[in-house]
Image (tube, rainbow, N blue to C red; front, side):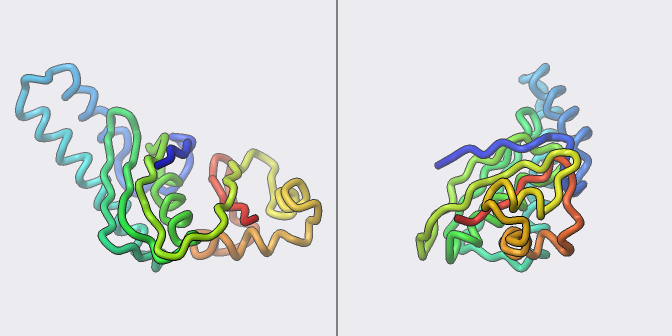
Length: 169
């Protein structure tokens, strides 16, 4: 198990993260109010379902994939069996590169283990070439990073501050 941190304000807008957070805060303030607890649970379930749908749109699969979201902490917990290390890491990035998510609790296992990638958080002014230069010592290695982050990246120039990328070994 590992916990990977993300920037709350960066990422895909899959659900109303402010609404989910507000429902969670109201539920925490009134732990005996069944209606507020139910509303928070419903918002969390809807957010988790949106993340699962997003993972599916990226053509990523894991046996027994289970995603849960906690609006109070902004955390996603993901479990299941990924076919390989790259798929596992891409699923984690799909969970974390979502607006409103602060961290991902990784409970995924891998059928075919391999070396783990590093993660890199994009900052303002970054390009894949600049990242490749700092990570690999060669700007021309940017395609390695691009390919490692497909299908989440559709073009090498379409990265944004706060986005977390896989940097393969």
